[in-house]
Length: 178
Image (cartoon, one colour):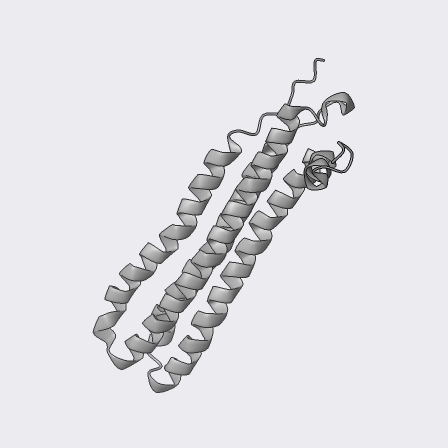
């Protein structure tokens, strides 16, 4: 195998601008987090509306599940803002420097971690919120017990945010003096 045909994927990844990877990471962070929040709200909301037919009293207190789902989208927005502040302009001669590539990949990986952690968190909170609404309609003493479990599910999104912030700490761009 000659050098020109070997490892075409690695050549393609290295030739893509680190700013493109950074932008994709930021977009994935906010976009997939909002998708997780929307999916969780859909799951919780449909069960909440259905269970409220039997027990209208559950509607207002079970809105906390919808708020937990919305917090997942806010996590993605916060991390996207943090990742956006990590971007710095670099001279054209240093765009493909190893330090630039590491910064771009770091922001990209942070965005993916946060986005998909929040997607799973939104689903988790939505499913638990759905069961909370349905069980509260049957037996109101179960509300607080299931709400505690929902809080633990919501912590998954915070774990993703923490890991994303730690990973993005590696994003240092080359200095402008060259």
